[in-house]
Image 1 (cartoon, rainbow, N blue to C red):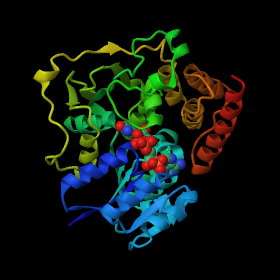
Image 2: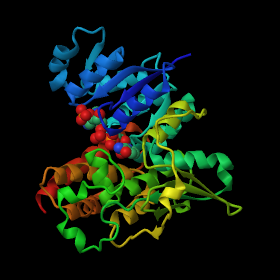
Image 3: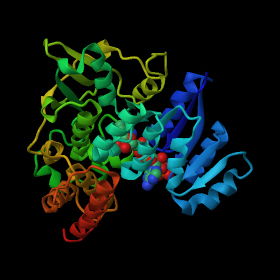
Image 4: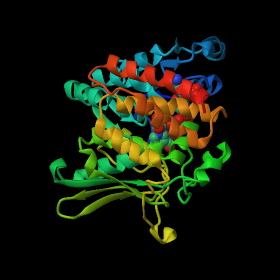
Length: 385
Ligand SMILES: NC(=O)c1ccc[n+]([C@@H]2O[C@H](COP(=O)([O-])OP(=O)(O)OC[C@H]3O[C@@H](n4cnc5c(N)ncnc54)[C@H](OP(=O)(O)O)[C@@H]3O)[C@@H](O)[C@H]2O)c1
């Protein structure tokens, strides 16, 4: 039986790697649907090569161009954000790989979960802002979430060595990003170019900036809390600059089970597609003798305020993570557009959290309301820095 895969965000860093993985897996894995926001030329190229039944272009301004490029093919073109939901719900799709960036993936992730799909989830923001809702939806529908984030894939794999109640702690490893050894003053003069130069991982611009501020790790704490149903106080962050150990689970008997591999997203993507099978793939094999030394450091909470905010927000829950994420997305856009400085990103997020009146986030409306509030607030705050 072939597996039909819908890739949400096929033109991004994860999406392109997912297509490489699918190429290597052979004919049992077929591309049923693809999506992009505005990379219309690349989406057309992918559509011509993989011949999915559907392609979605979420920015409708590019729909006409997409029709010009692939109108001769027997492919249905969906325009606008609802196209993502439609491809996430397709009855014959087995696996929905969510690789769009930001909260934009939320509706589609929930839609796929409601339909009981296997969710290979790279898009961490929906878990951060609607983790409880997503958990409940998957429990009701029988949908299975396979994490693609390398740290959570590692935890998922290590968790298979014991029961959840036997877990002492989850240790999320972090490369530390480009400013690992910086002190708070150094961060004042960081340029966009420096912030985009990640020492280990080659990723999209938003997550690269999130790694530089360590917001990414803060999100991963919240993501782990929901994915593994583990209290926040059992989740630790450990700096591991080589990014070879992708994360560790410590069990009550003192055993630590870690997953190791080259820093290459193809491995967790492939595992999420083939689970519970393991098959030979394109990820380069790790040679520990070539690595030599693995090093570890405590995380620097003084320089990276984002990390302590992440713990606070994860503990607070309710709409706090929604505001945390929306404020970050907006502040990162402002930074990428050159309108604010690097240090302003986390300052603005903290300011926004301080102004927010936390409420329970029980339904989608609660999440959307807090998200919209934070985006408005940050736009105002960004003008005043
Ligand atoms: N890259 C990694 O190694 C990595 C690792 C772990 C987790 N993740 C997570 O995976 C997700 C994707 O990361 P990435 O690095 O692949 O990002 P990316 O390279 O920026 O790609 C993002 C994808 O989302 C699409 N997109 C952008 N804005 C959209 C919108 N408003 N609505 C719908 N689609 C939109 C983009 O389309 P266009 O090309 O048309 O803009 C592209 O296909 C993020 O949540 C990230 O945190 C990434």
